[in-house]
Length: 262
Ligand code: CO8
Image (tube, rainbow, N blue to C red; front, side, top):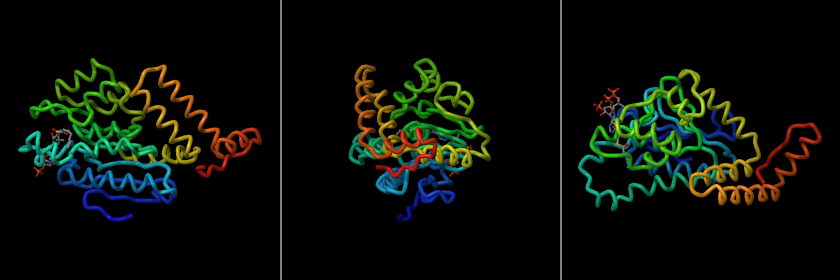
């Protein structure tokens, strides 16, 4: 894996061959999401998505900030045409093409683009000091990388309106209660707890994990009827995998399954 300027990538995280860690690394600006950082992030995630050893990716920041949003300095004087010409949003679209599960491990601030990035991951585990919010309204703009949509789908219209129109943050417990966060853990144990969850997922049949992720995401894109139909197709598809045979046989033989990802 090549090295990057704005992110750190660790394969075999904590000695586990199927888990990779990606850490945002612009501490001086609280991991503000510059165009370069986003490009590097997408490149690293694509590489890990293609890597047969990797089954689960953890995305994190620092103790102080997951990410405090888009890089305001970089954006401040931009015109709409600059933003179009820079293809600034292409990377955000590309994030949704990753087929393996990505767990956001959030300590500190996840604001603006940072909150949107965490929401674009598949699930969020938060340290108890984490803060979530869409503060764009305070600086004269609105969320631009899916916040109005993803936050509304995650926590409902009224709570999303409160967050987006006031720009005020939610603490980790409020975010968990609202359904934005899957689990809150002590800040000091965030990485250990996230690793434990990643380990469980990495022990499941990898193809089934991908198909399940795809089907859950379809719930955001389509009607219930079409979503259920989509799920059924993916369900059938799992029966084409050796891992499905292995999983069911292992259950009947009262032993642990050995999944190989095919
Ligand atoms: N961009 C650039 N620099 C930042 C950002 C940011 N988003 N956030 C913090 N920094 C910098 C500060 O300027 C400061 O730099 P310096 O030390 O040189 O003065 C350093 O990080 C530390 O920050 P603070 O001194 O402000 O730290 P505090 O602990 O006092 O405050 C906060 C922490 C509350 C997180 C505060 O920094 C803050 O409010 N940050 C901005 C939050 C924000 O408004 N985020 C939304 C940005 S807009 C956005 O995300 C739109 C996304 C649309 C899609 C983008 C596609 C490209």
